[in-house]
Each structure stands twice: as C-alpha cells, then as structure tokens.
Image 1: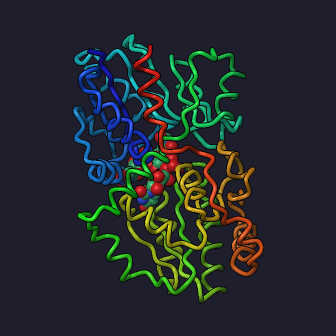
Image 2 (image 1 turned 90 degrees about the horizontal axis):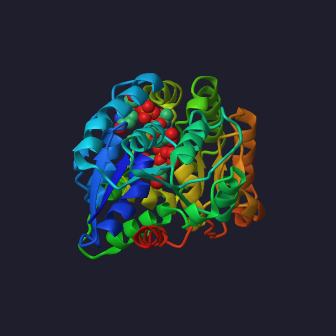
Length: 374
Ligand code: UD1
Ligand code: UDP
C-alpha cells in the first residue's frame, strides 16, 4: 500500500487540501492516506475541518497568540519529526506558501519521502511581496519532487527555474474543487446552516454589498490604516452601500480594524465565517475588496469584480481577463476604484464577467491519477 501524508496548517491550505484528502480516500485499497495538521491556525482551521468532515490523524496544535515566524518554523520542523518517523510516508503533500508549507516541505525532505507541492509555481518575483510567501513557495518548490501547478503560467515559472517538465502537472487549482464540493453540499436538501440564516437576517441585501477581507503581513501597520480609512470614506460617501468585513483573527489585523471601523453605521465587522457562509456571502456581494489569494481565485468563478489591496499578484490570469484589478493600499486609489464600480455601470459590467481561469473542479482527480501512475 502506498502511504500518503497530507500536511496543512492554515484556513486556505485546509480549504484547498480537503478535496485532495477526499479524493485519495476514495482509493483506500491503493493508498493509506493520513492527515497531519500543524494547527498554525486554530479556530479558522477547525471551521474548515468541520465543514469538510475531516478528522486529522495527527494534530500538532502549534498555534500561539501573535506567533513569530521564527518560533513557528522551528516548532513545525521539530514536531513533524516523530510523525514522519512513525508513519514513514512514501509521499508527503504540502500546499501553497505558508510557514507550514515551507517548514513541512523541509521536514518531509529530511525524512526521505517524496515531496509533492500542490499549487506550485506561483511567483511575483518580489521576495518581499507577498512576505514571506514568495520565499516559502520557492523553498517548497526547490525541495519538491512533484509539482502540481494550477495554470500553464505557473508551470512556465517552474520550467524557467530548470525544474524538469516530467515532474510538473498542470491540474487547475483545487480551490475550484472545494467550491464545487461546497455548493453541492449546501444545495443538497438536507443541509441547513444557521450562520447563513443569520447573515440573511443581519445583512441588508437591498443595499450594494461590499465584502472585505485582509490579512497580509506586508500590509500590517500603515497599510491597514490606509485600508480602514478608505473603507470609512466609501461607507460615509455611499449610504446605499453595506460593507461587510469578516475580520481575520490575527491581532495585528483585529486591532486597527476594530479601532478604526467599529462605529460606522453601514460597516459590519464580523468574526471569520465558515467556508460555505463566506461563499454564500461572496455570491450576494456587489464588489469584493481583498488582499487574499484564495478569494482572487474564487471570485471570478462567481462573476464578482475584485479589487486587490496588494501591489503585486502571483495570480495574473484574472487580472489579464479584467475581472481583478490591483489597487494596492493607497487610500485614494481604493476609494477611486470602488467608486468607479459603484457609479459607472459600464465599468461594473466589464469587470463582473463570469470567468474560470483557475480550473474545472477536477484538479484532485488529476493529482491522484498522476501519483497512481508513478
Ligand atoms: C497565515 C499565512 C499566510 C496565509 C494566511 C491565511 C504565514 C507566514 N502566513 O497568515 O500565508 O495567507 O495564514 O489566513 O504562514 N490567529 C488566531 N486564530 C486562528 C488563526 C490565527 O487567533 O485561527 C491569530 C493568532 O494570534 C496567530 C496570528 O493570528 O498567532 C497569526 O497567525 P499566522 O498563521 O502566523 O499568520 P496569518 O496572518 O494568519
Ligand atoms: N474564507 C472563509 N471565511 C472567511 C474569509 C475567507 O472561509 O471569513 C475563505 C475564502 O473563501 C478563501 C480562503 O478563506 O477560500 C482565503 O483565506 P485567506 O484569505 O485567509 O488566505 P489566502 O488565500 O490569502 O492565503
């Protein structure tokens, strides 16, 4: 039996790896698949595990309030050693570009397992933006044996780094598999969701909803102050707009956001939403303003325009298609681009095309088939 260990630690990795766990579990006669969570995130990770009904085999339970990159990296490598030595996986799967990804890929390499990188090859070519993700994914790429690239652009980035063509597979992004799973589950007759029902009661859907998320480290400090000032100005100038912001649990995000935005009538600050509720809220939104990677990939599939509060993106496909615009963290630029979409219907309809550059929902199938044929 081939032994797989799937390792992840944060909300987005969990969302994007959950469909892979489910796909491997369909072939339990061929693969013994175990899940190890570092729990770099805790509540935000547990929300995802619960929705996708995944019970991890190993939980390193590492999250500490306001954790540092130094201690988290060291803890992940040290705590993975006994797991890797006990289970002795043939293949270890890591996802994307977090500290869990980078540290787990190194630990897996030390163990002698073959390392498989899911969502491989994304690059901005700026090592400080996003920080530290650009370096995390480069490190994971260099220790990996197999690279599952979401698009042909990400494959080309890997080829340019002299990674062998035969070790790269273009799969699409597994986030689209997750979106499909979620919409199938939510629309099945038996599903009920109290959180979505609460949102229906508490969100004024007769107004234009602007959905906001933000957490990037390079935006901490002045970046977040600028973002909050922009949201405040948009809310005050547009009383017909309802801004909803599920605030990331990082204290460096919570503090400025609650200090600067708590008292504004048409801004609703709420706790992070479970995945199906967030997807539902995206579908109800008029505009999405975010610095998230995953949201940039999901929104085009829902036909929603996205303003990205970053100076660089490793996801150029939707920018090229015109459904995503980079606005950085300059207050005036965020206000200006949002107002353009609110007030000019031509600009709005150009950006709200349904567009699917990130996959067809079959990425995990392709990964499992590739591994089966090795
Ligand atoms: C991390 C990833 C980032 C990813 C993001 C997704 C790194 C360096 N950063 O950033 O690439 O895009 O997750 O959201 O890997 N916290 C909680 N509960 C939670 C989660 C976080 O309280 O469930 C708080 C804790 O105080 C924690 C802090 O947030 O110490 C920061 O978490 P961390 O994972 O280090 O950084 P993120 O900003 O979440
Ligand atoms: N998301 C969620 N609840 C929220 C906000 C986001 O489930 O309140 C989902 C979102 O649909 C996407 C992922 O979390 O799939 C993005 O995570 P995040 O922005 O934290 O990280 P990034 O993608 O930037 O690494």
